[in-house]
Length: 295
Image 1 (tube, rainbow, N blue to C red):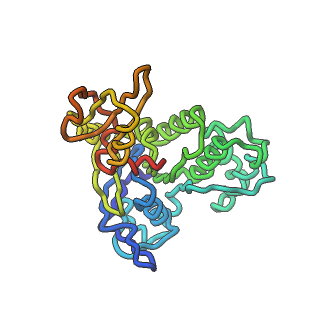
Image 2: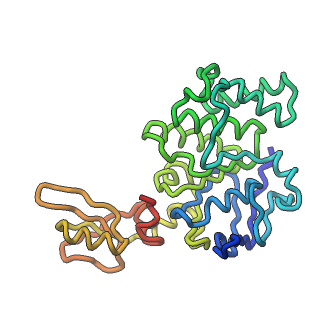
Image 3: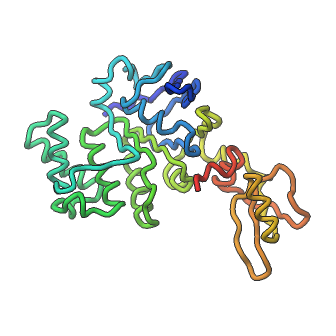
């Protein structure tokens, strides 16, 4: 498997109505799970569609090793796996039958297609569900099926767009484990607005906001941006509402005598506030405000 880095140079995309979805984006991504974090509308899905050869950018260059993605799309397709944000399949086909059909579409002969299908089932932990029809799968099982079809061609680059949206806690944990395992032997680009997905799987990440790259480094480097700026203090409901309007309220929990607010502020927000150890969510909110949480 080719483990060449993915290099994005000055990528720009402007939609027909003049909306700038990506503005001079440059990134270098190596093996492992790399997180692309940002609010809804940050440009993440546009970037994923360009990298998955579903959209052509207005300007810029993308290289996978020595191969130009835009000039040699057929070469890239053989090295690419993609799980889009919305994934559907023929509802009455069984899981195993579906993967064999997909493998045949890659040009594999029947025997090799069956072998690749069975390998993908095992990697995605779906072997016991091989005879189940697609329509009968749970949400988490459908996302794992999506991963199975994306790794049929043993890609060097695997792109997954908002893969855990709508999954329960158990399904999300299983998906995190699968992504981490797959990232040991390829580039996995994980696009999400869910901070927990990044914390669970990624060592490095980039943050997009309004189409621009505003952070690119290791996860712990982002967390450090909130050191000495993350606070907790007792407060009342009216103050909580006011804090929410500033966009710097991270969370609030109710206690017997009122509320404990957690905020990210440059200065101590209250005489009763105490400095606390920051997490990734705190640092992310410091960068983009509460809109970054997408809820």
